Length: 259
Length: 223
Ligand code: HEM
Ligand code: FES
Image 1: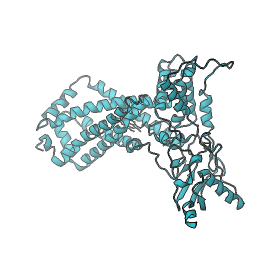
Image 2: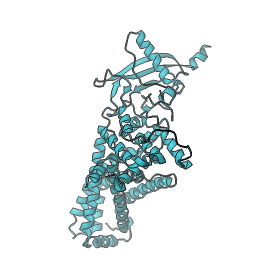
Image 3: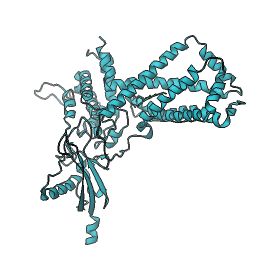
Image 4: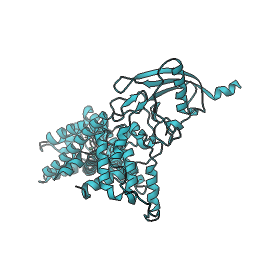
């Protein structure tokens, strides 16, 4: 009975980043955790930390989360130096404590990039990504009665590729994992998705030009093709979407019809 | 009228495209440079190498070619420094713990360092063999003199290892930057990139090694 309980429970040391606000200097708080169930998700483990903190009369650790099922892109965290933790293709909310060892020290940091200022503790401001999207990551259509679904033929390989790019949940993990804090995988995924589809064609040139301009203005770095983004992406978005954006950008710049 | 050009060349993607283009042309230059240098091994007394050097120097268009090379190097280096500065500025607060997720390679991680080693090497190299060469001495003798000294051989050897590492990532990186990524040929590009790194790195590395350890005698040099 107790042997069973032991294998299903972990004692952990946490180094958690605490920071009062955007301009405060942060530091790590060390906390000991006892009897953490291996069946918990990483965020449930943090919930336990916060229950303890609240019962001690202290401020809980702020961290972003929403759906907790790997689809909304709200959760973040750099866990022992890895974006969304050690499991490939897994968001932090879908990461379980069984991937950690008893007695392990876990260092938890926010996503770090100048374009992602810390709001508090582990919460960061990722609205720079929203501004990239609003600068062109959409198609303009008149709403009205829907047209026939078969009216716009799309080749299967193209629709598959566009779907792969559309899997982006916008978590910003690519930026956090990139040694240059570049947002090329995020921006590339959206440019690529819309460039592959006929619906995206009318705004193809203006879209890539203005999304890249916004991306640069937000202070993200330049891509040096390290591919850490792809390795860290919880949706395994491929860097070929970055190459497609590079093509789209040079095409629009060099031979495009917009001035 | 040239607004689009300035906008493109100063964008993140445009800067990288220019770096990639200049880098690819520099790789092309290095292939030709290595082929020329290999004449050093063709005969015993370095006569083939000397005559290759003479032919090159007597070409009236050489200054034009040199100017072209200078433009390539300066463009590549200035952009590399600018890109690196911007990339540093994009993350000022460092991670306390950093672990790779498996995307990067030794070559990709060390581009800035190998680039700086190459920059230092370039200055020394041009001073050694371009500016110091008054045309009176045999080129082969000058090379042997320079590379039989421990300092010279050491610097050249380190720089050529850096070159190999730089190019092994540079070629495939440039292809991706220029938009060439496709399941059909990306695996080939990766092999070519590694191959270029090995051939150029080891090819140029052979000169300091052979001359320092064998006194250039593999090239038949009687010292
Ligand atoms: C011998 C000559 C050189 C050759 C053949 C060469 C070639 C290349 C190529 C093809 C790239 C890839 C560009 C891309 O991905 O878009 C590159 C990247 C780079 N080069 Fe060079 N390079 C040379 C010398 C230098 C020097 C002297 C520096 C000095 C600072 C330098 C710094 C860099 C840096 C920092 C990068 C990485 C940036 C990136 O991947 O975007 N390189 N190089
Ligand atoms: S909380 Fe929604 S993806 Fe993790």
